[in-house]
Length: 254
Length: 254
DNA sequence: ACAAGTTCGGATACGATGTACGCGAACGAG
DNA sequence: CTCGTTCGCGTACATCGTATCCGAACTTGT
Image 1 (tube, each protein chain N blue to C red):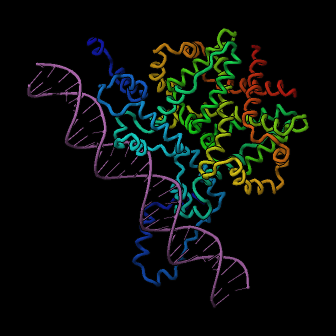
Image 2 (cartoon, helix red, strand yellow; image 1 turned 90 degrees about the horizontal axis):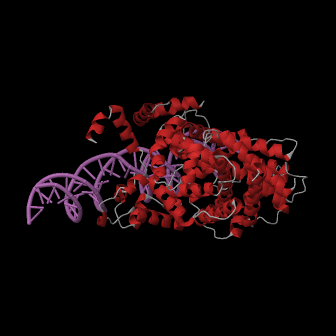
Image 3 (cartoon, rainbow over the protein chains, first blue to last red; image 1 turned 45 degrees about the vertical axis):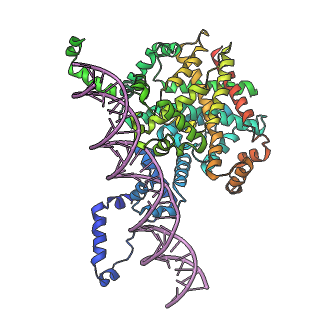
């Protein structure tokens, strides 16, 4: 599979090139001119790009890197995508389609809640998504499919179409915003090469200490001193989410 | 003093070195550089970078471009910043400090509401912020200042420190998430060179039509047909925000 | 006032990126 | 069997971030 093409080393390619230059017509004639390589498909491209991004972050996804992983020349990719932006679109759609099913629960609240938790899990599994979901227009098929599912769970509640969309948008905004913050730390951890929460805190320590030393942020300082659930991001997410759902129910009378 | 340094263990020195390496721009900025000399200052750098980003988008902010605008050689910038990331940090802090004051209203609800509207305005004015505020979770002074202000408005309500932070985080997440979506369109408009909402819709038309033609998204289709407030992003923002505030009030009993 | 040392900004260069362009080979339909 | 379309390759270019070294200008100590 992809491993085969990946296995071809740089040295191999060089040898190939040299041989090609010096060999006779006859040799060239009898060899299948095109090595039987795996064909490219949009799926394969997306899959490979997602794999790279998951392993090394979105910045590691370059056209060259991607082509190399697929055992293909860089420009070969451009037969299938108009540019890197489309690769990103494919990546997003692939992950959403594969992992972000919208829950179909009985009542709207359970449906929204489960979908929110599900999306959160997906975003944490693929942290690069939060950096790209606002890059390009959100009109990929699976994204619309997810949106459709959420809207469906809000029908027959007496809300008009505009309000239904606001409800979905509000919950989605909350999830995206919250998870973005959490992921900011994860990303920073990768960038700095640290691997644990404590190491990260140590890394921030100097900056934080300096900020607090100014004495200009008493309320923030109180949080640093008094807060005891700084690591419990699930607890935070749940409390915030329930607030949002409560508010929707209260204000819209559903 | 000398004794102190003598007494300092090898490990301590290592820590010092590490701390120094991770020192933020802000810390370094505070140490006075020999003054009347500089043609360049952190302020000037930030100001110029913001101007470029406002005019042509964040992607137009390159070290070369920035230096050119400041009438300086590219590498001259590196005396003041460790790299492009720090330029971004400076930009963010500059704008937040200049334009994102936290409202100090009587009750927490008004304070949060006004701050949310204010932040929304800032983000719309500088669309590039939403693309960088989640890049890294930079604790810039003005960002912490804003956070501190928001936390202050929640004191004396009987909430513990963790819960106060959740409230602030929830509202902020909503604002960021919502505005991100709106800005997605704005950015796309710049990229494609269109200038009006209608042109953008026309640009999306084919994609949209194709998506709907599949018939797989009935609920979404209903929104397209029935929704009459698709352009009223302020209305959407307000409704969602009030839901969030309602929910906070309801669930936390404040 | 002069020497020593620090700081500023400049120039060059390297590796990596996205992609425009044109080519030859492979394949499916007439 | 041919011919047009598709596929993938290779070269080339502009641009990016930044490592490294340098000379000149200013501050400071004597």
